[in-house]
Image (cartoon, rainbow, N blue to C red; front, side):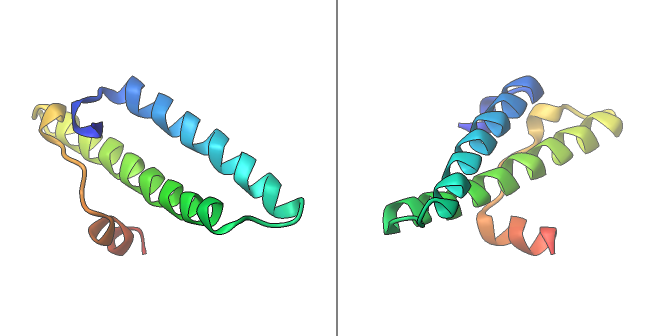
Length: 84
């Protein structure tokens, strides 16, 4: 899904994920999350890492004169290692 998005669409996806993440964090303060909500929060974190990584890849391709559409979503393990 992300592989076929342009920068604007990726940013819109990030905004939606961040809004949902904030809603879940608000629920943490209101008494905690159930297992499904906790799992969703973890999934959002991974998706956000992948979105930001994809934007960085697209920028790097663009800056080197290559097609930014050649960027691809990397698996969570790769992105998490990259982030650290």
